[in-house]
Length: 175
Image: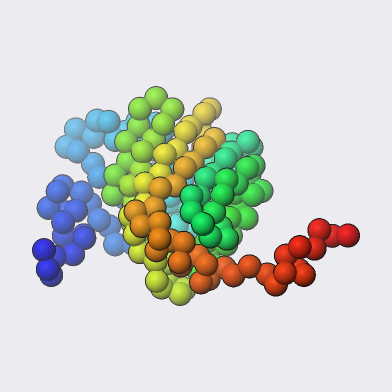
């Protein structure tokens, strides 16, 4: 469909693509399943992420024992364990101006499925759909697993923007 934007396609499908706003969750006339408390939590999490509010992420949304898995073969890949590691990861994402715009959230029990557009702004170069599986416990995110729509593009982008330190520094264990 040449000349048709992603936002136009989403609107045609009944979704609201609200500019650059995060947490824009499609609403049905009845509001039904989209009002699940865990969907509300993730919507609020995306609002804090959009505001760059790392303190809110730490204090309100992340469980102390959170694990956040980033697949791939790049310097930011792997599972981050605990709030400090996850916040450090988000700090790195902030360096390249990562943004997100949700277009689908659904919950069943302790799991929330999320589809969103995620893109870089500084420098530009990564713009893909991401799927996340969030596990919620006691009103906090205890686990998140990212699934990029284009793993090769994510790997290339993160390698280009997060090169490894030179060997002596990389191997220095503080001794």
